[in-house]
Amino acid sequence: MSGTASGATVFGAGVLSIASGGVASDTVISSGGTEIVSMGGLADPNVVSSGGTMIVSSGGTADGTIVLTSGALLVSN
Image 1 (cartoon, rainbow, N blue to C red):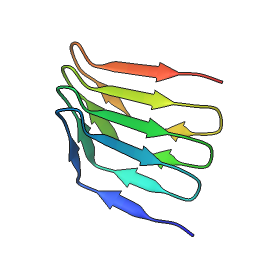
Image 2 (image 1 turned 120 degrees about the vertical axis):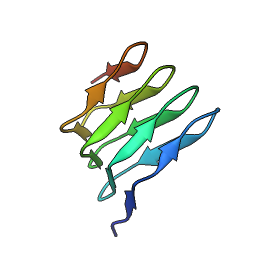
Image 3 (image 1 turned 135 degrees about the vertical axis):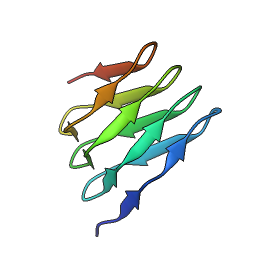
Image 4 (image 1 turned 60 degrees about the vertical axis):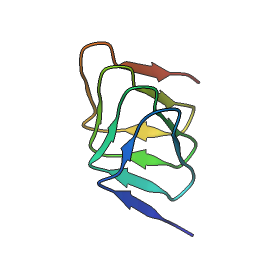
């Protein structure tokens, strides 16, 4: 199975989770929002702006991601 989130905005304690086969494109994560990309998930392209957090865990892919001032991109294995 696969799903796509395109053009989403995540903020204010919102969470977008992309798992195996899922794709998030043209997404903006800001001010308290979190995007989690796990095994088999793809975020391409995305913008992490002030106060936003993107977490890419083992097997996840973030391609073309832009991190702006005070945004955070965390990559783990």
